[in-house]
View 1 (spheres, chains in turn brown, cyan):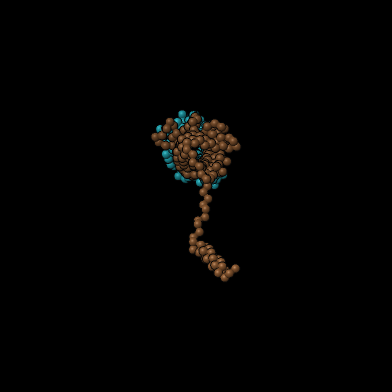
View 2: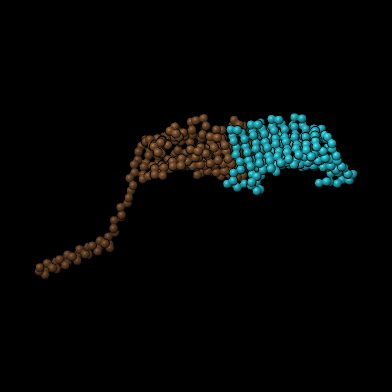
Length: 212
Length: 193
């Protein structure tokens, strides 16, 4: 190998080393790849929630967005909750978010009605349906009409299997002209038994009648 | 005698309780309070189908159940109100008060259909003018009579009378003693109480 070739190789190696160093220290590396979960948006879809193969609820929505484990439903046309395979409750809500893995359904600006003789009407800014426990929770204020009762509470939990309604904080129940105020109450919807806890005030109100 | 006149408090109570059952929608019908209880403690149950309201605070120190209507108060530690039968019972430290009238007993019952009131066990009626002790008091709204029976003792400011049966006619403001009665009265104004 002659000296010119040697010099050329040395110069080339030095140049490559300089370029590598320049790239390493002076050129900003590209941002790392961001993991974007796959999402699917469906339009005019019917979504069915099941537990052990048994239908729990069914939603007809204009828009369904699935991202990860979360399914967001907007423009709900129809939502029905089932009990023993039979339609149990109809729900109107602005938005529903279902976490599939946890089987938890959040309903925003929800109004719940039944079509039976009970005449249930339930209104809450947020309702949380937990499929595993089969409970409907209102962590905030709730307003309920039930068999002539007018119920308000700061919190509510409904155990749908046991058909027990737990009411908590600033509970008010109007039964005709009688108005109950109490700290806490548990109402057995089937037996029509109300257990009350803490202090209680029961008052008859002027100008009210049972028909109201 | 003013003793019977003071039993007008009972009439007010009867009016209240009757109104609570029958006059829904006709105006104020009073209030029921349960006080002195933690929010975690169960105090009772309302059976809507049977129309039975039951409350028990006998195990809770300082707790009380009180019905209030106008200036009449009836209170106790245990209460049951059968709204369909218009029946109410207070027991344990049962007391009815109205201004300077006070009735206490082991239990106080109200029978709406029969329009009657009964107090049983260690009955004491305190009025401005006298105190009546008896085992039992039966008040009949129809006849406007209050019957005290069992170890009856009427204590006035100037004496007392003891017997087994005493009937008060409220309207006439009369007292009628049955059976053997004995009493003592002093000339000077001394109070046995």
